[in-house]
Length: 419
Figure 1: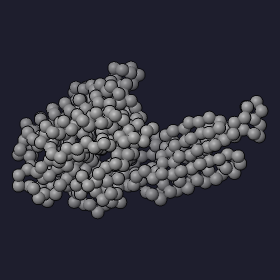
Figure 2 (figure 1 turned 180 degrees about the vertical axis):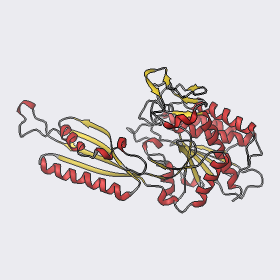
Figure 3 (figure 1 turned 90 degrees about the horizontal axis):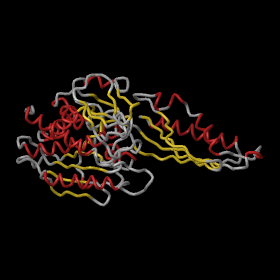
Figure 4 (figure 1 turned 60 degrees about the horizontal axis):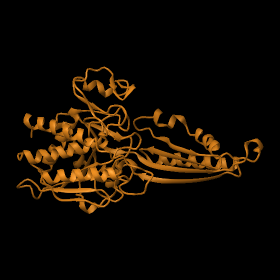
């Protein structure tokens, strides 16, 4: 079905309006607590979405004690027996950059020059930062004011799903089967599916959590975390010869032996990496956190073996030093589960094409709730939202992407009525 100009204009206006509202809600997650959700702001934002879903004819709307939102839309008349499909996005934003008091700015008719930020005179966004910007010359682009991230990851996904919901109510000619909408907390800290009730999800889902317009993702990193604890011995530095084992200094030496060529800033596409995300401590004790990423499990095992060999070598080199090492598997490459789900991928490709966009089959150099769900038996590819430079103060999104992602949701729902 070709969407009328009236519907397209509605999708653009509605998605932009929702997005500008949603990003003002402070939903940064917090990895330093075991609570789920990790922050109260996610609960408050969820309450807002619950009220909006009620106004859009959804039924069985639940916001549970962990902040998960589930809602069901009855099918269009005559499509009661169509396969149920779910659309998922996450409530939280990354703790890497402040998400408090986001003030979005629309840069009208972007002309290709550097975008300046009112709250940081030294910050600018240009084509050297993001080559995709060149594609969006002449379009409207949304950024923050430069003192926070924008929050397109994943408020854009939520806005796009909610806009499709609004369109299904306003335009009854848009046909669909039974729809389930789900919003998850704490995706950014790896807990997005920790308390999910899979009984409330359909057997086929799509996350809207991808990046550039047109991207469709069915492969992500295999992900591990390494927690390394160095326990040394502090002695007065004036009398420390052959006595002191300076834990944080030794930790720095240890970490310097990780290959620089296998760091995020030196890798791309299918190349994996080690990434030091935290180091803290003093003479007596130091703690380091590494994340280890690759598309192939065997490559990650090689990296973990290397860290283990470093640990053994350093304990020989410093006999009184104690090193604790704990590897935690965070998520799997979802391709192992989706490679047989050709129909689900094909329908998503067709929906993107129907929206007038070139399909870009893309690797996720990161994670997604779809990885965990696919491992749980619910195949869940990832569809673009259109945002770029996520987790940074330079994060941005063209308004056209908000419209087009909502179009993809509408086309995808209609395609399922023909299956």
